[in-house]
Image 1 (cartoon, one colour):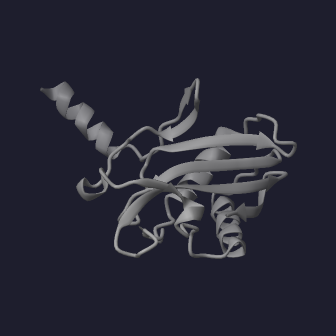
Image 2 (image 1 turned 30 degrees about the vertical axis):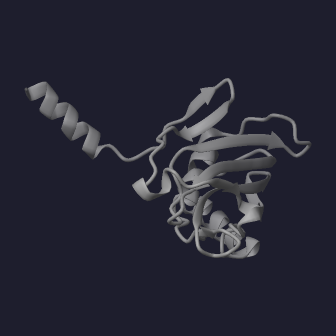
Length: 162
C-alpha cells in the first residue's frame, strides 16, 4: 500500500512532459487518442478545405514562439523545419496525438535537439483558439487535420506556416 501511495504521489508531482514515441511510420509527441463523444462519428477533413488555419498571423505566431523559446535561456542549433501534424475535433479542441516531422533546410530527414522539439510542442499546447470546422452549408461541424510548421534557422524560429 505504501508503494502504491508513493507511486501515485510521484506521478502527480512530476512535471508534465510530453511522451515521445518513434515508430516506423513517424515520430509522435503523444499517443493519446480521445475525442469528445459528439465528435467521434464526425467526418475528418484537411484544414484547407474547412478554413481551419489558426486565427493568428504567421508573424504573430513566429514572435510568440521565439519569445517562448527564449524564456528558458537555452540556445538551440540546427536549421530546417519542425512540423506538427494533429487533429482538431469538431468542438475546436486540438487532440493530443501529434506527429512530428523534422527536415533540414533541403527537406532531408533531420533530427533537431529533443529539447527544442519539446519546447515547440509546449508552445503548440498554448494555442487554444482553433477554429471549428463547418460543412459548406454551415449546418454540420467536422474534425480536421491541421499542420503547423516552424522554420528554424540556427536554432531560432524565423517563420511559422500556415
